Length: 196
Image 1 (cartoon, helix red, strand yellow):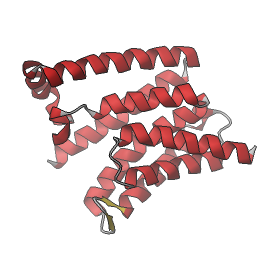
Image 2 (image 1 turned 90 degrees about the horizontal axis):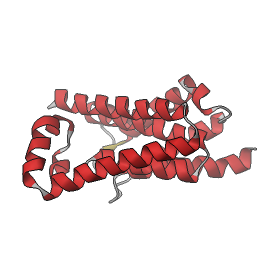
Image 3 (image 1 turned 180 degrees about the horizontal axis):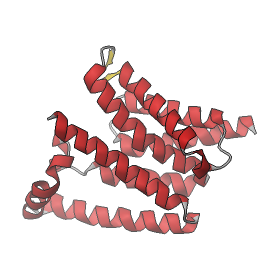
């Protein structure tokens, strides 16, 4: 089980960071088109597999090892991730959206791995240690990849990472692949008015 969860987290990070790197080299208009295309392709696949049991069985046969048990009969996190990325790119400055997508790509897997293996201080189903791992991984990624988001300040990076960690921790009914990038982007955008 741990090996399968590790593969899922690796997929989460690599696919998320790949999308960040690709969109960082495109203009915002092209970013929106790319995300729209990816979102609608994913939506068609999700609808087909959820309404056609044969397609779902085939999908699970090939990709089930990357899915959580609740995703086998519900939309996968990929659909929510693409929607969160699309909303962030549409509503906020590009550098803010890119960092919020990065925070999700590295922070969420870090929270899962650390929280599952070392989490002792529980807050519902999550752990304080997992949230601190989210924050730490996101801030480190923010500094390592700082060239991708230009003039994004240290305070904005910490604000985005902290917001993402809090959103990941609280038990919302909405998938955190959607809420983390949007909430982190909104918080960074808001704080940018006060630090410039």
